[in-house]
Image (cartoon, rainbow, N blue to C red):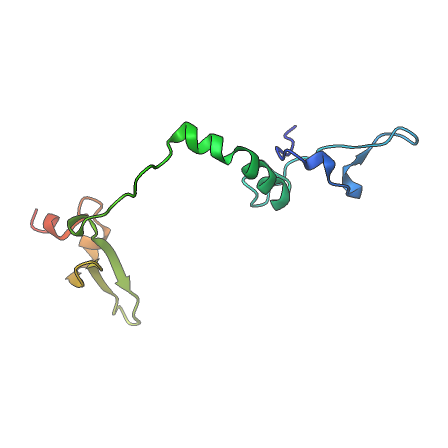
Length: 122
């Protein structure tokens, strides 16, 4: 059985956490929820309790950023489209840093090998 990983789950005083027989009752951790709480927690409170306690450790383990990351103009291209009715959808490459938009076809938009306008001629 999968239980909530919240560090204070058993401390929240709700009726569904009460267990035990008359005279020997106690609060117990809930089962985890299948909702959108990280699939390991029963509520947002429990997820936030865990994050507040362990997020610094997790960031240190996986790599803390010590200087800002940058995205240069040549690497800032992305594919975009504007949906239109009657097969009037416009596909394009966009670079907001340069203020450029280059029209492309649907096939070029769907092609995973084409990631920048420089790949169009290949």
